[in-house]
Image (cartoon, rainbow, N blue to C red; front, side, top):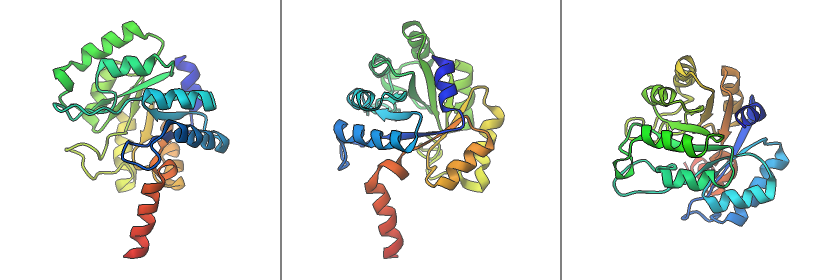
Amino acid sequence: MANTFLDTVKGHLIISCQALPDEPLHSSFIMARMARAAKMAGAPALRANSVVDIQAIQDETGLPIIGIAKVDYPDSGVYITPTIKEMRAVAATGVPVVATQVTGQKRPNGDSLTEIVSQFRQEFPETLLMADTATLDNVREADALGFDIIGTTMHGYTPDTDGMNIAENNFEYLKQVLEIAKHPVIAEGKVDTPEKARKVLDLGVHATVVGSAITRPLEIAKRFMAAVNN
């Protein structure tokens, strides 16, 4: 399964189809149709949030999915598939990849990431693990723990990286990730133009994920409104 998924997405664009509860397109039916559009455009794989959305998208497209479950816990800033409970639920859908947040922050219930990874490997040995990282130290930790894929997903979305962007300074941060990562890197997070998507692939990432710029019309509309109203 590892080689199959990684071969499928190598050099390509993965489209993330997500809508949070407070967004107007929050619906597994709508996300499945969004995923159909992504498939029609040529996306070889998708990223999706929640078991119900994943199952609806699987039924609609048959494409491989990087599965996550965004859940907020009061005692932690980790919210992307934060505990073994969510990881199990996502993996049980049959997705080839489960992504979890690896940002050095305290996990819910004080859980140990090392123990979570070990337990998951025992229960789902064929499922790939993707680390949604924010910093170079996170990348090193994910590599040391044996994550199959390193994502830049959280760069710019944690207290110590707030406002940062992998495209800044001619993609200097991403270049550093590529230099130190021992596993395939998927560029994700604020890759918001076709030109940036092409650039990160040319830099040598294994694949790239684009979500908001394609599948979140509220965010797209806000960008246009901000531009014309200034």
